[in-house]
Image (cartoon, rainbow, N blue to C red; front, side, top):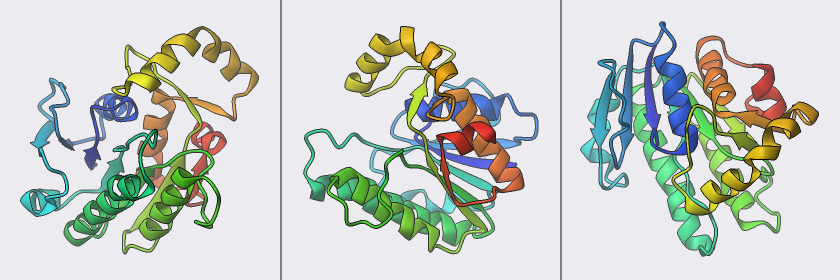
Length: 219
């Protein structure tokens, strides 16, 4: 498979990239982001873009891929709905439309979140915006599209979040996340499981388009 990863330097993206590099069926990886992924593997092609909104600058490089793993995301903390929607809905859809134009026979996997509001009418701002993003992605002409809605994610193999608030939260909760995962296996997943599940749906598909933590772990 030839795979595009957006956001390979984030916590989820790092885990996804690691699992792709461990999979012998992955022929090449286009890592698109503002900073280098740090991967030392000849299969990784770095596409550094200081302004991801300027998708015209890199759209030509998106041609001929089998899957796109979209791991970009920002925290809604202290953001207005307008600003959050621009970074979450507008950016994602602009990029996804460019990917669809260049690689229409592609499986698109979007990292959303547990609690996303598909009705787009709930009280939670971030959940409404994520819901609108999911709904719009599912209407695009991809071979297939899947919305991953993980809840708590345990970062493994030395992976850390670039968001200070999240990194602090994971650091403080690390001693209990492992035991909690054993007690609540359907509510908590890991960076490894997310990456492996993405590869599985890219290869084989899944029985439904929206996948919660329990579905991710089952895959």
